[in-house]
Length: 331
View 1: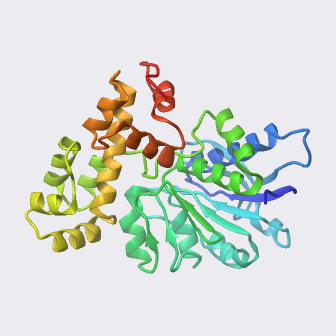
View 2 (view 1 turned 90 degrees about the horizontal axis):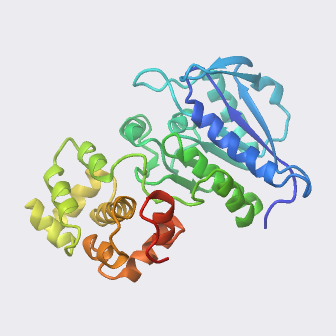
């Protein structure tokens, strides 16, 4: 049941955080409220808070004014969003924010992170045993620091109970659109997405990087040749047995080894590569849908349509009209 009251959302901030991790969700919430203006109570009250309050400086160099977290004690907070970003290759979790999150967590309806903000929630002890997402480049570091976390390296965002986590940077907007839909229904969420010129639901993979490239960099090169072969042979029947044969391994050993090193099954890898290849074909060519389906392994045009509706929430024709100069062939 969509909410009928104003919901208070606190977005945390600290020096060297990613600017878009903050302003992306903040703008989505503000847009939802603005689109609903005059039709009842405000949808969201947003507060940007830091450990000590005052000005913080984001990694982009833009200063942001904040309130101190101490001023929020005793205030009813519905949702807390932790951003990512830091200097260097080691995430620093500000101790004051860590302890404050740990105290607040039991009182919240939802606890969320964007990008490497998952490190902040993990440091506060809120992700143990949870399925989570984070930026693809930081997956191994988060796993090494917190082995009790089940990291999904492919998802744009993940909901596990009251905890929501998202992938890199722009994925925070995807997560926020999902929060809006949970709070106020699909109509408000789709209005917000249209105003932001975004899909309400993007592909399940972290689309800010190439699927083949990510696969090739995630295991030190062991499956590089296989990934290159798959990308060149998407039209074939890419069963586990066929992939194992190409990799020179038994099917059982291959499936186990691949999932262990890649963090997803061979089937998920093939699915992601096929979807990305179909998207690129729609963006860059005027090929009819039937030819794209055949070239990318979907075989039938209807299979391609079903995958796009399930994964992206749009038809191939709608995707092409938005992202290419070739117009539509069919919906």
